[in-house]
Image 1 (spheres, rainbow, N blue to C red):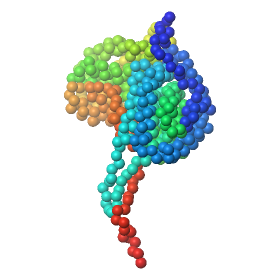
Image 2 (cartoon, helix red, strand yellow):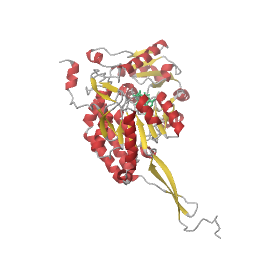
Image 3 (tube, protein in one colour):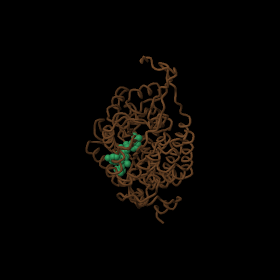
Image 4 (tube, rainbow, N blue to C red):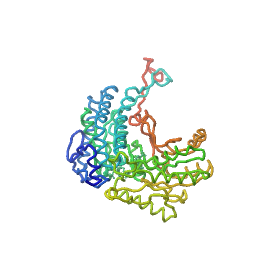
Length: 505
Ligand code: NDP
């Protein structure tokens, strides 16, 4: 038995969703193009389905519009709506292994990571159920003989468009608050990872969400994505993906004044000061860039190290990188799994080639690892590059793979200038024992998240999002629920007298 067979036999297998998509609460064969995802560890086909076409989207919209107005849903009290979300959370929790298996097959991520993502998705539904049950609407100070208050009401039909890198987590981050807010949701996954949203649909269906309120619509960005952005029935767009597509969506949404949240790309800087705890910094930097094989919007892909410690820090970093275990996603020891797709690996390789041409020095990696297992899949070695200036294209653009550029800086001012000299603003890391300085640096960097002496840690109750080319709007947290609602203000007369402006004859 070869190594691949051994890994394949080492885990419990689950049936992969096949053939049907979930349109307005009905399982049916999509009328659109065929979609085929493969297992990036050995390129075996996961299955075949046909995506949604215009008629399917029409149906999802029609059923969604009806369901959202149906008193069986519209009249539910917050705690009653929350109870459905708790049941979805429970359903996810009971199916963590199945979800993890499907997502690993679809994306090549390690089972360790996909289990964590499935658990976090359950936590997301639980969190928004709790927020819904406890959210309060306050009276506002009155300026006359009336009572004033603002209420949050559902928007109606929400579209959620997600990328391939962490589907169950990004799906949950949109679907949970949008349903909690009382809307119907049309979810479109990436064509490279179409399966896990269908498992989510099965769980949501079993949890008893009224039919029509949720549709899972795999299909191409140009057909399904386009409709979910431009259809006049859609009242709110929630998008996570690349900055180029984000720009297009922002323009289309603006033309209809539709609220949109855009969680886009990043080129996040990580700054290591000379007084940092070196082992903590090395562990954080490596996790920040090489976990998820670098396919993470918040990957700390630009490392700035203070000159006084640069040589010894980089040497240790390279040694620790060489010790990372590149391996099969089913192997519990694996730290760096394959990339999602051959096409994506080629894009990463092109960036490394460009770094070489621009004068960069490859300190480790920069190639496909060699060996039987690796040849079967889309693997790429963790790569560290030095010698490029902050304005080189490799230091400016998102690569979305296991590629780290490292640069020296002399003092705090230069570090902040270099960190800010980039189009993106999603996250940053600061490593220093001087926490006051770390906070000062965090404040000076234009970004959505600052990690101090840690990296890539997340909590569903802490808002997340970017600035500049990394997008706009925030997910998670209490405001994550409000962002899927319309705020409506009420004035209720308390005088019981006609307004004085009119003089009755
Ligand atoms: P893309 O922008 O290519 O695609 C994202 C989603 O948009 C997919 O479902 C895609 O469908 C769809 N899409 C493509 N074209 C259109 C269109 N014209 N209209 C509407 N929808 C469209 O990103 P990737 O899937 O390649 O994901 C990687 C990117 O996502 C990276 O840039 C990464 O930084 C970003 N990302 C950001 C995160 C954040 O929270 N800030 C988190 C995770 C990723 P299809 O697959 O069918 O083309």
